[in-house]
Image (cartoon, rainbow, N blue to C red; front, top):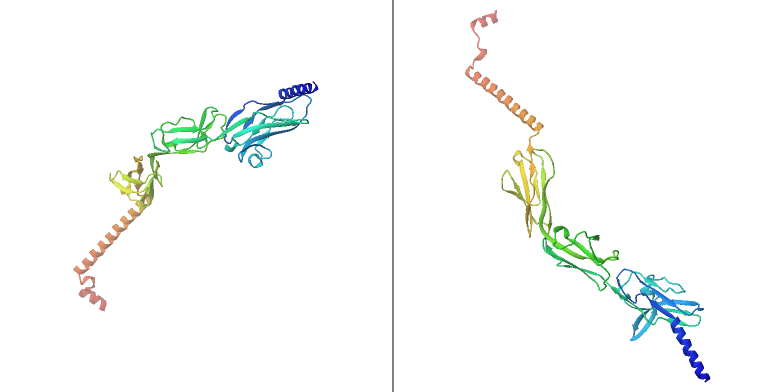
Length: 345
């Protein structure tokens, strides 16, 4: 009879402990993005009058075919400075883990102990850490072709957000344009600080915005030099340049830079360049080149003409004087009889 009473009291006591002692997880199945943070919200209870002395979180691990629970505070290599206990030694047992890594995926348990008993959670929190992956298909297109962006993750957390070269996208990319070349990354709304590794998109196009640039603006003088440079935006880069002049209406040169080292008036006219790559060609807008003689040039020219005129007049007078001398060889040296008589007197 005494043995039966003792057994009854033991069973009753065990039932009371199991009912009062518990660990409850708010969400036992969590999914989070690599690099983000996650909080295990947890509440624990125990018999009134007990005093909690120890608390700890454990992660399940399979070692040599044996399932073990390793305390996070002991597993320093994986969780050093990354886990934060938000609870206390009353009823809150929440835990936060920062900078999540893929190998953080697994089962997590909570344990607490009083002066009389230690209690480990019967259930666990299962955490899945997913790495977001951005894909661009195809990775290389021509302007005007269709492009598909896809953000792959096993977590269904919310709407997907896209970034181009680190900046939020303001438009939906569907038909590729020249300015869409860049690196694209994605994330989930609410996790903007954590982005996937970027995926590159290369949009190829024929030369755009072709322009001809003159090294010296304004009126140019005869004898000076000037360079005309052909600029364009193209992918792949332009590999052929051709220059045309309105004065000749023909090709005048090839190459990105047209160099005119000693200008003449005949160089005046309208010039344009044509840039091309494997996808096509485009012409620049025309530029006007004006070449004329300066005032100094005119003065020198007039002075030169004046000198020539004077020299010709001088030469003419000399020729006339010489010819006159040949026609009257005695000249003024001939004396008459009266002159001779006057000299002898």
